[in-house]
Length: 205
Image (cartoon, helix red, strand yellow):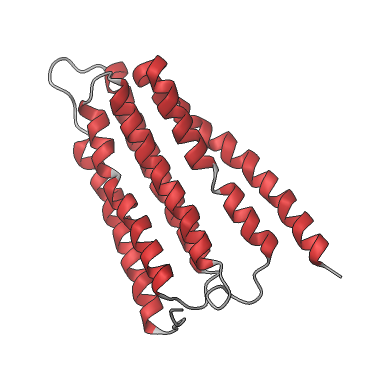
């Protein structure tokens, strides 16, 4: 079993993570440019929507990562590896966002984009499992809080995978389904809060 370590190594992991987020969120705008020919706001709408969704999603993943790392007191190789895989998926997001800008109305383009977003959410869930282990997480963290975080984190994969399926029928119109992320996140957040209270309530003598 890998030894849990503390100190400067953990700070380096956080600084590196913030750097990846900052670069990824900046690169999103590179492919946001007018298409050749007469400008049409309606034609540009899917490109703008993809940029806004990617910007918001990366920002939300950064905040979730920040909040998760506040529950961690040390690190080991498993946590570093899970964090690196998560960051790799984040760093990749500018590419599928750019593909949407030039992909016309092909369903495969929307599916590629939506599944790329979903992958980040799945890897964030894996990162939660890696962080919420004895010795790595802070001792005052409850099982209910872990369940709350995991349930809330399901919103992104569910919405994005649903969008990928809908792209077979709606083409680029399926991109607008990504806006369901807001109500689904809110709903699952409330479900997670209820589960947290029940688990921690049952654990209280």
